[in-house]
Image 1 (cartoon, helix red, strand yellow):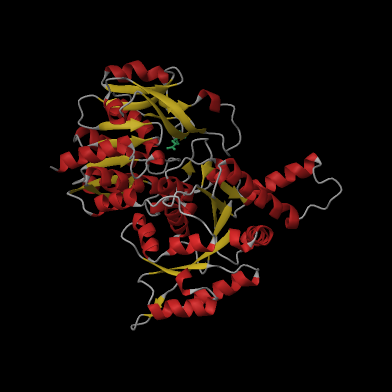
Image 2 (cartoon, helix red, strand yellow; image 1 turned 45 degrees about the horizontal axis):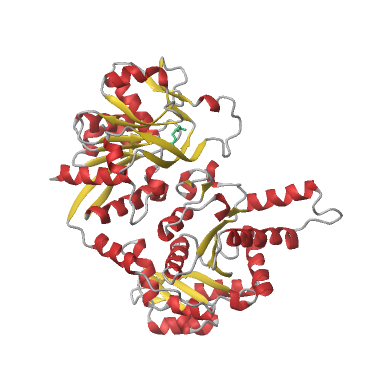
Length: 532
Ligand code: GLN
């Protein structure tokens, strides 16, 4: 088992996750089993309690783990299903160490960062790699080299290389090469300094991935190689790419795959990037276009809706209809009305969310989609609000609401899950992860999935209140998907509307380049048709 460790220098937001995922794709294309691990040096045990405005979307895995959004990139790029163990945080490591200490596992010893915390980190990585039968454990260390929080992790990586040999551990450092002034000179100093920082803690990178707006000039490449003590072949350029799916090809063209394989003494078992290239061709060369409005409350940080963006990429490639997302802040609908902001959209998506800000704007967007027969998809909160909108405006149940937003509503058509009533803590206590959903054989959703039993991922505390079911269904909103012996509503379809499907689960989380989320795909097709 070999290890590739990806670190980041200069600043965050350089696309370290995409670099890591891309390296994974390239090694997988050689027939190697790659197991990715993301390290998040923050003290939270998981991402579940964090605001999407800070770290972007919370990505939910099959096992219900609430993880960093990079896990989503790994799953999509490598086409694997990961578990919570693939996301290590300081919180998880310290929790494990403290539990052992209380258990008496270190009896008589003083428990310290070195060696106890660093051992825990190394053991965790080895354990996951071994369990999955990895040829390569691909580890991305979140944050920037020099951050205090990252220190124990980098120290653990240094120890790992010392213990199992430099031929078994390869360090890839991602940095920024900014371009300054009118002459557009590429500056290498930030890279030099962050590599120096890395070397001061005993880590010498073997490869440097240099981000910048433009490709690296050959002289600059040589200069980085010289000052950072890395062979020229190990310095690769990662300029801005049209899509994230271009990045693996971009790195491969610079022979990064061959370089890594040689350094780690790996043998290729096959050569296969064809599917990836095919996918990219389809994405690049659309036959049509459509606009889908995404009505959310975190639209200023697009990463909050990353999996939706990706699901539409996947659907674009499959349909050859390029989806343009129009970002609509639901609060703006409350101020200006739905029409001015949604006019011209050929599809409308209301995604998941928490808290009451912008709720009425989302409800207005759903009403607009329903009345104007614009293709509509609702996800989680969007599903719940689809029910609220229908109850208010079709059934005439005034003030119908979710008890999340109005605990005193006379018509709580969306209510707390019964098992949530006794829940006190907020961490990992929602209904989470993949659950089985049964679809009615004749419904549109079953046709999209090509199946009546599906597994999709969840993250919610509230659900449709069964007390209102009969009334709602009699008026034409049908719950065609259910779980737990029919007790829980999972999918709704509006009869007589060209495309109006909403789900309690998040289909975007399992969308893959070659297997798009069926409901996003359906929306894209319907939007293309609507566009004419
Ligand atoms: N806030 C809603 C709930 O907890 C919806 C959650 C979501 O959209 N992920 O049920």
